[in-house]
Image (cartoon, rainbow, N blue to C red):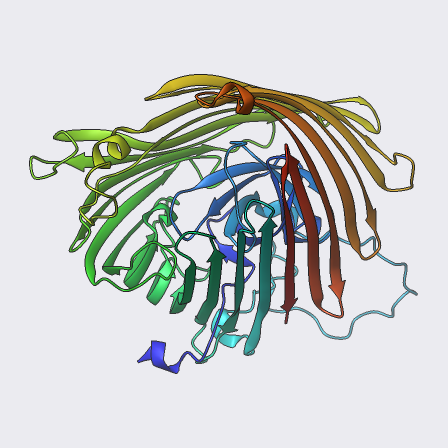
Length: 542
């Protein structure tokens, strides 16, 4: 009944996550050259350099990155895995200390001497606070409506027989705070997708989808309530790794700061349109914290799915967030298989893992180490051709990488990354090193020169990238040129070597009458072929 009364909604930018940490929800607003994206939250929302950001693509999985550039309303996040591509519009979150959001107390202003007070505080006794301000309870707050609408489009044309590809995404989200006068919130988030691919001498692809990412009502989860529940369609709150749920979730915070929760309902198809498959889902989790500061925490949970898709999934994660020094974040996904699974052996399998430890020094220098593993879980939903199922389910990629940066001078930063990987079909490595200079050529300009190389499974490459951009009053602009030489494996002699030129330019406009706009154009030229792409992302918050 409550869900039907919720006319709309979209998640607020800030959500309660603990007594001393705050969860900041965000979205990717643009992509940058190299393994980096721009998010729509910045210093004004409490973010700081070195913060870890987690992204949750609709298709599943969790990817991480670190904040390397910061503006008031936006930030640049460098992805831990350079091979990961995060699309514009993908949701994410970052946990920050609550103390960052506390407003600085203004210095007192001298006032004229006041005559003696005529009224005495007869009810006051020594030991009682002079001023006892009580926060406004959620049910006493006025109705607040907010949200955003957005449009994202991209088109690509190649000279290879005139191949064309394009897609359009348009959607919006809205949130209602305290819509029923009981302190709860209602959320709705939907998107329309259109994709078309023209393939000469082949089958063209024309696809349209309407996807509802969220339609829910929740209550609790504030400092005034140790309980929280949510009903409808939503990304699970206590354990986002379990994905989107059509159902009900209950969470409870214990007096010692620990938290537990459970959910029940249906798991929609975790792909483009989140189609409802009516697969039964049941899950539970427990989160332990060391103390009220929540600097050290461990969580564990179990999810069961039965229906067209079947899965028994265990998730465990830990976080260590001291005010200074090394921090740690780690999450593992473990699937359990039985004799009834065709492609996997009975027992437990580490399907996905990501573990990151990092340090940000007072000098601004930073260093991070990341390990990741990816495998394809068997879920009995017949996603793949039976002829290649064995190869897909045996596929595995393990990766260990290091990335860091060091300020050589006040406005010169040396940055680099190196990674090694091992897969079921081979192994390889990649590396990149570069330097960026602030106020280069222009005030608030930034220049960057990077060189990179890699030993891949099907090709080896080496190249260089030159980027120049500038932060201006209305946003940011940049232009990038990249040249790389590729040596292909398994091609004929005349086709085994290739030089590629890549040119990209982008312009971001921030908060123009409430609108944010990102534009980009890109060209890739290799041998006798080339491709040309244009993209736009338009968003208005209200």
